[in-house]
Amino acid sequence: MLKTEATLEISKEAMTRYGYKVVDAIVAHFDTQNSKLPVASATREEMDRLFSEAAPERGMDPDNVLQFVLDEVMTKSNVVSHPRSYSFVPGPSNYISAMADSLASGFNIFSGGWAASPAAAELEIVTMNWLLKLFGFPVKRGGGIFTSGGSMANLTAIITARKVKCGDDFSKAVIYLSDQAHSSNIKAIRSAGFKKEQIRVIPTDSEFKFALNKLKNAIARDVLEGLQPFCLIATAGTTNTGTVDQLSELATICKKEKIWFHIDGAYGAAAILSKNGKQLLKGIEKADSLTVDPHKWFFQPYEIGCLLVRNHQWLKGTFTEKPEYLRDIEGNTSEINFYDHGIELTRRFRALKFYMSIKTFGLRTFRKAITYNIQLAEATETVLRKSSHWEVISPATLAVINFRFNPIGNRLSEKKLDALNQYISKQVVDSKQALLVTTVLNGQVVLRMCLINPRTTIQDIKETLVLCESFAAEKFTL
Image (cartoon, rainbow, N blue to C red; front, side, top):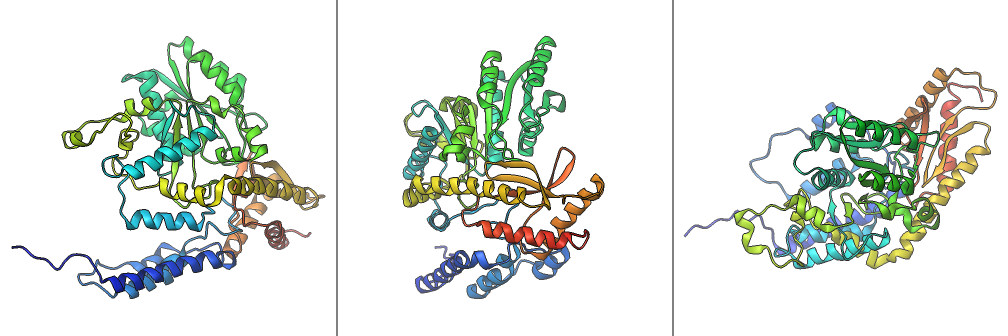
């Protein structure tokens, strides 16, 4: 009889000790993250010197491996949940969801099909229904799927729209999006097999929203040329400015032209929980499909994205495959196999952290946090407008604000002003006191803050601005 000692196991006592060390480290991180430096930096050469080695033939003491990871890996990554991590879209996270991820991994739950884990599938259905109801989608007919993030959700939406609207021949299909749409959409469109000439990037207006007349002209021209307008991607909360496209007007255009209406709400959709956000997002319920990213403004740890659709049959009709080895686990029609609703067959139990955090804190707490974020950005705008040193380029919108250093009486050229603001950003990041990088709006280099961390305070903002001014003073006499 074959026997092996290679069971990849350690004793119960060792597991307990090891587990406590891991939990203690996570708790210590959550407890001290506000006081850490938010920025970590290193060169490839430095990382190679520290980590490069051949895979060891013999194992090491697990405590030593853990300590090395805690000392050298966890300390050399940006703290994206830090109150002064302002750039890109921060990931504030929360401890309950982090522990839920530990449970999902610890029990090694496979969340692809009903037969493998009916409870995991059911929780995904339940949480998906929460989101459908929140965004005004039909709960009985609608559906969706949790993905790795917004990029995969957008790709899933585009492939679904292609199947529903075009069938197998999409050679004449045309897709529309604005010049402020997230780059993941272009990547998804190209990954779905569309050529550059099938993509229409529509300019935006002075408020960075879809230029509706230019969109209508583009659609009309394509129809006259015998092409098939099949999909339009609107944005509910652009990454650059937080801007929400004219969703109701775009929905009307799509309905008239029989175009699939997809909304990329990866950043801003969660703002529907706040009073002001709900007003800005009016019309979101008219989408055929909607991307939401819970690891952004729903405060979940990476990774969890989500796609919602008005009709769950669209997903099933697009992605279902029936290989012989899965024929015994199909179940009945109410027992959803989520591998039939998206690209992934192997899926981790992403729904658990969303479920546990909502159950633990309640939607009311999430509403308060999001409302606070929106108000914090508005308070930041007030601070900037009261200063003679700063110019607001794009006002606070869904917790995003863009500004630049441009003192009253300044005689610097636009080129030098751009260089100065780029210098301020670099110095702030190099100081590791805050993560504050630039973007470009209307040809100008500007500083951008995305304020979705509920632990960020107005004092954090004011102290960061003082830091910026101190670096500006190195190049400019205040």
